[in-house]
Image (cartoon, rainbow, N blue to C red; front, side, top):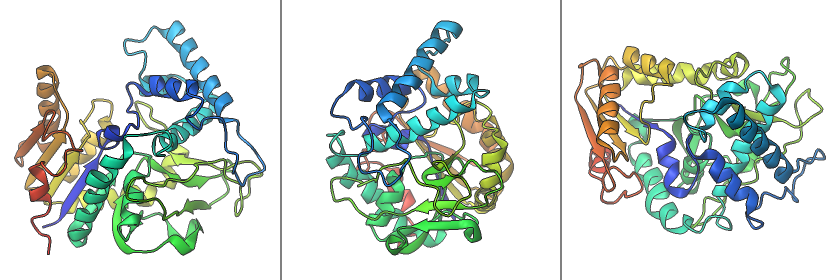
Length: 357
């Protein structure tokens, strides 16, 4: 049975990584906390230091100004904010760096006391289970963070990102070890970096197999020196900005091989699991892609936390649009089975592992 697991922000939310709504409140919390690690990268190997605390302050100030100017319905919505600042390249880059840095801060045990239980009982356990059925399994993650990447590495599996290998420069290649497992990230990743020179065809890919049973052991996200690139300034994340249309042409060109692999695996999928992704209306391009490509799908499983009845109805409508009534959909919703972090008691795990040896 060929299976695809699609992961959204609800997969990372239980451990404290912010979702689109509530992002700036989490950022403000880290900015105000003198022990959060937002004061800068003392150990950075780059000569071009970035003052994290100052950069966080600049982005937060821009957000406050945006709120005053726009009076948005959802004032703490990262997607709305990024859609509105798309014309400001500097602010856009600062915001993307802040996103990556905030994810990294939330993955360190010094700033996240809730890591220990969930890291072992859910993330590493999930990575181990995926490994058991890896020959027929593809994982597609819309998240930038490295929670699953690190869980795979710690369990002895090496993420195969399907980047164009001839353009990749590996950092810490001695830690690139394990049995291959397909992990596709069509929105980019915190360990993929490019430079601002559009003629440069190099992607820097960072590996770091570390951590413990209690912690992902994620490494600092930047600033990264431009070694192997034509730029003289710091590298930047290869991540599609979280805008409503997600149309940044330059970034999407880099991600062409990844997107091609996504389409191929969706067309082959016989079962699909949606973990923590609620098929939002803003992901119109992706919703249409799923409707067009899931031609061999026999069953879909939606695992999410939804408490309001209107949200449940809207969620069902969006997923039924994807299925076009071609295959049944089983919902696991609520505070128990629907919470992906309550993994040992989640009925969908048995279905996921049906083909395990």
